[in-house]
Image 1 (cartoon, one colour):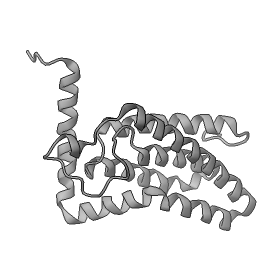
Image 2: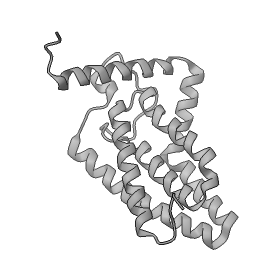
Image 3: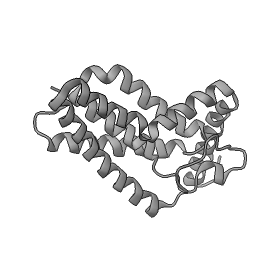
Image 4: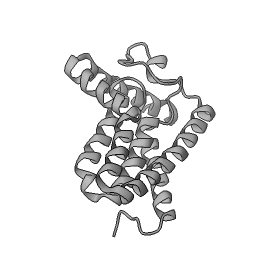
Length: 183
């Protein structure tokens, strides 16, 4: 019987998953893909999406872009507060076997800001434009995976960010009349 406390077993298991995912970055093609997705997830993709929505759909695109931007501002404030509060070291800082395949934007791991924003933005954008789901869902999944593969986050950072981003998007959609994912 394993005598380690549950918390230590969970941490060890998570580090194992992180290490296995991080090994994907050893392949140059895989590393290039996840690094590019990560860079786009820094904001470039979302700013471009907002601009395209305005150009393609005028006032309705502007309305959706303002909704995305407002959600993003709240997500940023929440993410920064959580990082300062939890101060969880990044995987590569805690385990020498894990490589940071790209430079992190800040010092701490929890939660994944890229994932939080990608989930929140995708859900809000799909509420306005459901047809965007075919590109936003795979992109968001790739952003989330990139964070672990690149050695910057633990799977629990990404999972928590997914829950937080979904909750934030849900509240945001609840506050804006006439916009819903289910209607």
